[in-house]
Length: 473
Image (tube, rainbow, N blue to C red; front, top):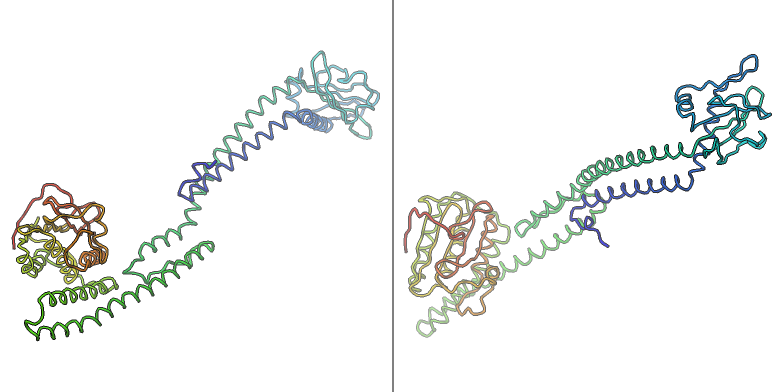
């Protein structure tokens, strides 16, 4: 059976529960042993207790010059025999069996008919005045003479004592177990948290590792020796990943560079042939060159190149992008509309990378819009969105559209499948979020969130949108 508290994800809570359970089990075991001992070894405990009282009485015996014997008990011992005279008795006997002193003044032996020689270290149950008593007798040598001291305790008195003591002990043990459990639980939780603090720091460091920060490594020194091999192995994996990722990026860059120049030369040679070259051939070469340029950009963005951030006017950047793509929109018979929530929206960004991100989103929207359609670009301090009236993106494909070289199964348009992937890399480099949703215009919406988690770029969270201005291209 697997107990629920052992499945909690917190190691500190697990240990606190286990330690607390251990205390409860130990306390329960102690009480069980006490109960068994009291039940099965009650007579033995009573015998030892009575023998101990005979020693106390022997120490209190006083013999004067005339040989007269008296017992001078002090404090609690005297009060016990006085207050419980009917249930607690003692006798002091001489060697001939004569009773020399008694707790209740009754000079009769508690073991009548038994010689003193038989009473050395003797114990048994008997009756005194018709009541059941436990009686112990022990010989003591005092001032050169032997005396026999008898101590008797009634069954009822022993039962009352047990009934009074056992609950008190049980309650005390229960309170101590509860307090100990609480204290140990708190100390265990605090102690384990302090022990695991280096692991939490290592977890925080692990979250900083990414494709733009592959050189980061987890700290090893502050970690417990049991965890160090795991973290060391993880750092070695990061070393191998960094090498492999660097080799991949170099391959992209080198391949793109090697292809770029021959393609330019090939296009120049074909252009000199004039009408003998089919326009489709030049178009294919242009598409191939565009793919090569995109590969170069992918290598730059994912290679960890630092961003040159500056204050950028988002509306001016959008006007540059729409102006750059106006010929493409005119050719596709698509109108470009810019909607601003504020007349002056400025953000901190790398202007070149922001241009590429916005260009790729608008270009993708134009390519997927029908003739006579509209692409709407909404701008705000929280983010931006690009909407089209095309076929949209199926919900199960909305995360795949950002993968490199991914194309929808039913897509017949030309393209490399890198534009949105580059946009995602640019957004990640800036710490932004790029999402794909359905548009109220009927097509797809690509939204970029600049702001804190929870705020939405315009259009992503449908609702009233106050428009400070709009323009069309």
